[in-house]
Amino acid sequence: MDIDAREKSHKTLREIFEKRIKQLSKLPRLRDDASIERSIEEGGFSRRDFMKWAGAMTAMLSLPASFTPLVAEAVKVADRLPVVWLHMAECTGCSESLLRSASPTIDSLIFDYISLEYHETLMAAAGWQAEQNLENAIEKYKGRYILMVEGGVPLGNAGSFLTIGGHGKKGRDIAADAAKDAAAIFAIGTCSSFGGVQAAAPNPTGAVALSEVTDKPVINVPGCPPSEKNIVGTLLHFLLYGTLPALDVYNRPKWAYRLRIHDLCERRGHFDAGEFVERYGDEGAKDGYCLYKVGCKGPYTFNSCSRNKFNQGTSWPVQVGFGCMGCSEPDFWDTMGTVGEPLKDKLYHTVFGGMGADATADKIGVSLLTVTAVGIAAHAAISVIKKPKE
Ligand code: SF4
Ligand code: SF4
Image (cartoon, rainbow, N blue to C red; front, side, top):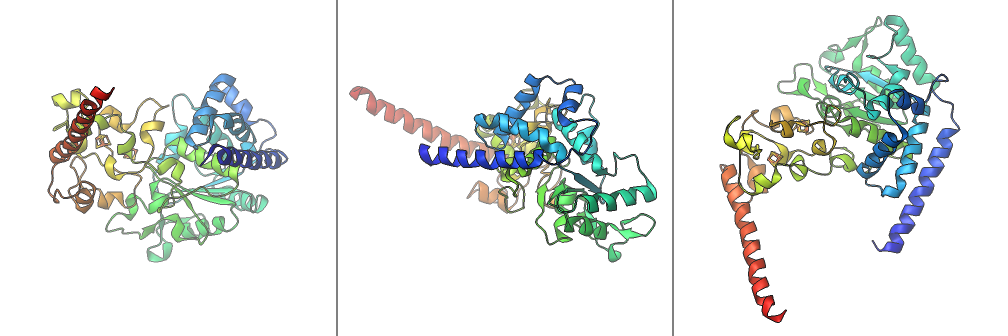
């Protein structure tokens, strides 16, 4: 894109965002007693922290840095956006990982604030009152609420494996009903996106992804658990654009899932150099070598963990020395092989062409090293040829 066209498209985007923020700011806040802004302040974050966070989110959403003030404005009006959060068959790990941290992050504060409309883990109500709250929220915010669903949906035995509340309502019907009048639907976590562990073979409860029980488009935000930045970013994206983001073949937002774990990994240099950990605790492990041979599935997995990290952004699995398990890919329990062992399948063969299904990581490293060496040799030869001229 030339500079003029890019500036034009930025101008159009800016106008779209400003219009959306203006529209949303006219809506009443979900709570009169507080605002997101105040909640962030009370969480101990200064304006400088907040703007730094907004800058990082802007970059994550692949927007130019000049859009940071607009992203910050969008966060402030997010407290007009009602969220209904349902739990299907799951472990509540996605919610817990976001909310039960020792010191909350800006992402978790935003999430905490906007989720209060109906969130089965957070709300005070229980029993009949909780059921009533769900019906009320759906009615009151018809066409306006964001539906976020955590967990797979069991369809086996006519859906009776997940029966909720006094009326014996099935999880599949609750999810389908809530989806009807939602402004946007996000499947949070791998269970909701793809079925997850309960859908692993032999899938006794017939668990499926949320997208199987509604005809409406579902944005998948997989991960076990998903990064809080991927959740809040998906929400911010919807808030700013008012439309669905560009999605990959598995309906994951491309801005968050377009690259492989392998593409962004800090151990990648060791992979390319053919330096691998052979056993946990060996010399290679101490030197931070690549974890491919001890089962890292990073080359097959699309996610942004190395950028976002976990535990208040301190670390992520590969950084602490354990390979990626492929948790944001469909059916990863069934398709990613044994934990601690590398995959030696057709994909392996396709990715590293011509090595055969039993090629080892050494061959991959050596082969890549050879390509690199050829490149370096060619570069050196060109330099030698060029030198006399210079
Ligand atoms: S195989 Fe795993 S540890 Fe090695 S570079 Fe790729 S993602 Fe990183
Ligand atoms: S590193 Fe891999 S297994 Fe771990 S959370 Fe990220 S995608 Fe999932």
